[in-house]
Length: 315
Image 1 (cartoon, helix red, strand yellow):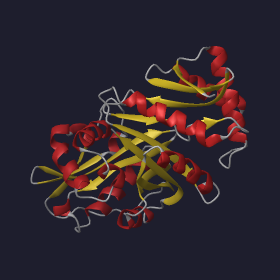
Image 2 (image 1 turned 90 degrees about the vertical axis):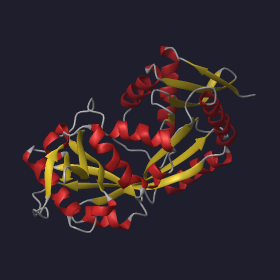
Image 3 (image 1 turned 180 degrees about the vertical axis):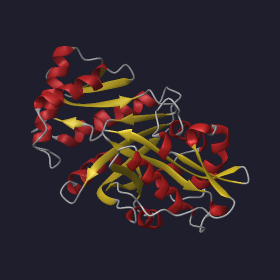
Image 4 (image 1 turned 180 degrees about the horizontal axis):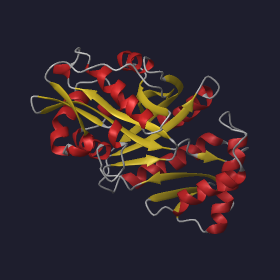
């Protein structure tokens, strides 16, 4: 009989979970030969010792046969670790996975959180069958597909500059208050094609806005811009440095001002500022179905690296 326990693992248990995880990765289509056991131990240790993360472990005869993590430190939404649950090689995966997922839901139910989300990244032609297996487990536990996104990357080079039309001007976001950004952000995204955002309810969208424009998360200031027209923000782009590259997003032009070349001016200015800051690579995510956005980004050298699938459950 499989026993499911929510606990803070001790050092020996963390080591056991790390070894289990490494074995699963080696047997997976997602395995990268550059991954070492030491790096997996480091990652699992960080997860298991994070005070905002709940660890759910499946035992069979007192031996761990699977585990999952649930991050609880974000308002209203909880997040299951990527490609969780992890099930021991040789075990019957489906019943163990379902038990772990159902226990993850039970963590959410008594809390103020309303949404439980799992991201399955790095989906390629090779890993797609494995993704479908995971998606099947979550579907059986009541999760639904919220969005499929493309992860895009570009080598940043100096871009052709596009001037703003008369009456429009750039300002650095560092000098623009969130109060001035809030209405245009919601105008863009409530009326846009971002599937993941549109799957959120009103309070969750408000939390997302605050996260995107959280000034405690450093921006590449010169490349994070707002477009003004008659004293109002009508466009914006945010860039943050991550692992030596700029992570771009959110990007938006309010609907009433679209079709005037503002997106091209915004992206070209931001890209050129990244070059001036010595940043030569950039990444971003876009809804797979948003062909207009993808076409814009492709003009600046962005190319699809892989897909991401987001599955959600709400109480």
